[in-house]
Image 1 (cartoon, one colour):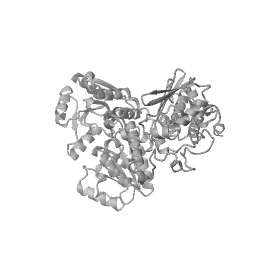
Image 2 (tube, rainbow, N blue to C red):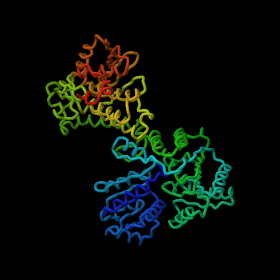
Image 3 (cartoon, rainbow, N blue to C red):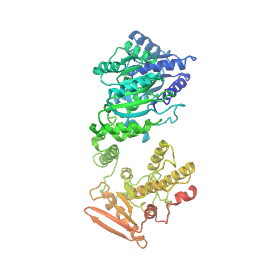
Image 4 (cartoon, rainbow, N blue to C red):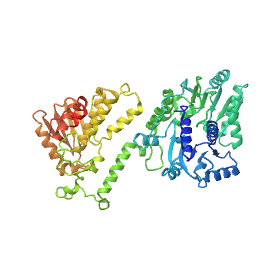
Length: 593
């Protein structure tokens, strides 16, 4: 989170790389932050033979040329800079580590240039509020994710309040901070009106020293203003959001943001992070028009910021941002947004299904895939997975916890089809890994993800054993998470689209006749095999088959709980009297035996 020590991690990583005779590039979004990092790195490594350089528009061209020459011949160990680092004339002799600070400020175009480094260079990305797509990549395992959860000692949360614009409120907040010897950031994100806004503050607080900062100022002038504020030669800095990233001034402990509704959620959190960087109590005032006049998204952003004001709340804010803005385009340049308003999960599901459809139809010869329906029975052998395949549904093992199934083993393998299915599971009891059971939110997310990616019941049993070993006996809500995963896996094997358990009954919804899975379900034997299994269990669980339009539903009586539903459906695929509760009650070795 902001102010938690990400820069310290970067300094140590850079030092380690330099000690191993590698060069390091530190990429930052603003010239101010580049200069600040340069001074911080210089101060921390002053006692070591490490040569550090900075490159930005503050640096004269002649000096830039000299530093680039030193970089190319290996005499410069660490180069800190803005987008200038990505230029073609910047050549490293032996680059070993690239550090990207404030990752959320870089666009896809800049990140595409970074990909040229990635083949041979380690990349460390630092951010308090990852953009939605980056966060989604991390949560689904496409990127490694580490979270710093412990704030620096004596750090206090920033008190955040939403107010309607009021000159009296601005005057009171500024005078209160100046009277206790502190400094104030006032953010107004319109360069055209910045001078007027600064004059208004000078009129409200005549004895207070006020200066301005914005990105259109000359390099030397901007550097001079920031330095004078850092050295407490002025009390109030009126600026645009140029101070958003990484500025570390411990004496500034009040932030006033004008027209806060026009900023993004992560921008607001980053701006708020410029204050409260010492052991003093800090305040952040968000000035907006009346909340009722704002669009719903703007209201949600402001309420999220007010709600998540505790230390370490950046991760929660990023998750809320993902919820508000959507996860963006996995393959394109959009870093946020609901793809055609359908949501990211549905988008990727449709994309996967379309790719599989093209493989099976238009490009079937290229991928060597037999089309469904043509010679389904006569060509069964060619459809089956290799005998040793991990995901094969044609294994002959009788172990119900493994991937094999004696009922399904004679049916054609449809692994590609299974991989794109996501059956809906519905039941009344709550299913979650409770915060009291597993306190770490990142750990809970990782556990959800690993359970969802289990390819068979043996892996689910191992997941249960691991969680039980680390956190103790699973409470009922956690058991229901496992039951839901088991039901989803079995429904996927049968190609069922939905399973609902309610009122002592279980409803199983079969694919529609127009569905992509219809041929594999009805023509290739799955429907007949499922009906046969239901008939065998009819004595204890009578069933009814009902058809509504082109959907067939099986309604099975006497299924009073989600655990009973698991046992019943597990029996249909294993032809054995298997109790899914053995996962929780017995030792793992006994379950897998």
